[in-house]
Amino acid sequence: MIINTGGRTDTVQYFSEWLLERFRQGYALSRNPMFPDKVTRYNLTPGAVDCVVFCSKNYEPILPRLHEITDRFSTYFYYTITAYGKDVEPGVPDLDKSIDTLLKLERQVGRERITWRYDPVLLTKRYTVRQHLITFEHMASRLQGHVNECVFSFVDLYKKLQFNFPEMVLLTEEDMEELAEGLGRSARKHGMRIRICASGRDYSRYGILSPGCMTLDILGAANGLKFKDLKHKGMRPGCRCITSHDIGAYDTCMNGCKYCYANSDPLTAQENFKKHDPHSPMLLGSLQKDDVVRQGQQRSFLDLSDQQMDLF
Image 1 (cartoon, rainbow, N blue to C red):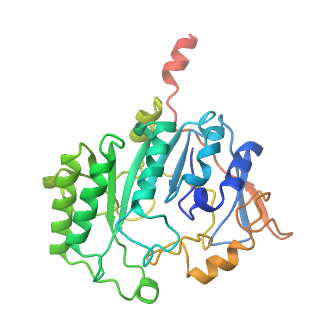
Image 2 (cartoon, helix red, strand yellow):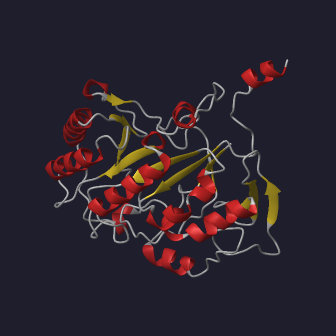
């Protein structure tokens, strides 16, 4: 199975102590967001986890102790660095500092295990199509030779964005076409593959690869693993990623990004953050007397046929 540490919150930036403790203890509990009294236990041991996937906007807090996980597990890292400033991403370091941190991460884990995420792409009066293309070119030039792949996506128009981010300007088809062409051109110029995430649009004419940013092929190639040939069901419409299991919790991220889908609103996240106990087996709160705990299914995706043949 694939463990995802950052789909529901920026675990690395705000809960590194908890995350490292869970891997040291060898298990974590995850509360079902739809049925809060149902809790799943996941074993966090090398025999139960094929690969640990990280998603973060700031790896600085975990870098001194990251080896505690990378020494024991196959890993992969998605680093989100965008064009936005504190007006859109209040808790995120500026892009040049973020790039410096990515370079530190690369020295630890190698560029084969890092994907730069430039998403979501959205427009405001400040962040125009032209501004995106200028900023992306600057970032791609600094990251040349340090990452092999970039993934981008256009913003999903969740209903709550109307309230949390009213200054956002709707993307037109012409905007998306211009952005795709420009991003594809910059990526090629700086020796990167570029892929679009969860989109029904085809931009292959600009050298942009189809969706599927977290596939078994990608994770396997980065870690020298051979996985089974399995169908990738995706995590949402238009997605072609392999299924992963998240051990985080919604409404806990302190980044305060205005486009965030994982927080209902910043105030709820701030209140929930106070409930975090780094020694609890679950990221938010603790087990309650009415909770029902079950062991999660942890089916391996590894193809062990060659090893089995060697035994005979």
